[in-house]
Length: 336
Image 1 (spheres, rainbow, N blue to C red):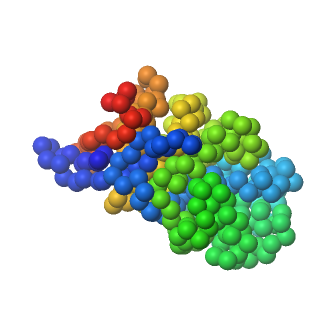
Image 2 (spheres, rainbow, N blue to C red):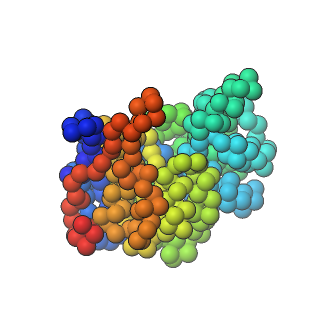
Image 3 (cartoon, rainbow, N blue to C red):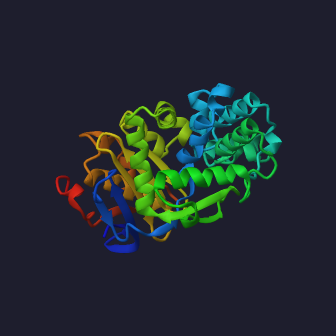
């Protein structure tokens, strides 16, 4: 089983257990760690599928939503100026006011942007929420289909029922099999097996190869605008930049990460058992390495997530995160 350890001096101070599934469409699992059927809330890793109805129901075409704004609908953005400006443009495009966002206020996760906001004497607003792009997309869908906009985030609203149906479609699950909860931004979130999430990403890649409009449009928006999907110093952004869109990745809260290796047709979904964000990025990098998803030199370009230091209050490297253990399965034999 793969684990991510925090090593301080000569001791392993902490261990983070990693559950993972890697699959291809129509094949036996490629690789796994721990329990690949672990049921967990996939959180923001579902966002590409929550953006698909915008394309498939015609909202993107009607409102002429450009790819950078569609990428924001898939984003857990850092709240940097380009993100805020983009979400505001999307809201203006669909003639919806900023006050209708129901995601709640949040300081930008990008520290310089948060400091700048506070230095101006401004309070964080829902537009600064890392999920404001997703919420703007949901408002666009509601406006396009004539559904009530108020309460669009709640279970039972047509927007959320449409989202559940889309996730069911790609995972191969029945809607009733998907566990529902409330996400950090207030919308419905989905609990499902890691294998199902990995399969959804693999199917998304296969559909894009068949040039299905929804899949192509969403994936190309993400890879054409990786900064809009996350932001400065973020692995989602850098991975798509370094691999030139060959690998697509989406972070989820509580130690979840999902990715698509477009070249090999492999969908990947992982969950760090204790929910540690610091461990899931290292786990994703090691998984991509063992699966042979990275070209020579790409791992070095992403080295800050391979074995990142943990700094003390002086800014010194006091400890390091490292991966231990190998994935199981036939898809890792050539890369170990």
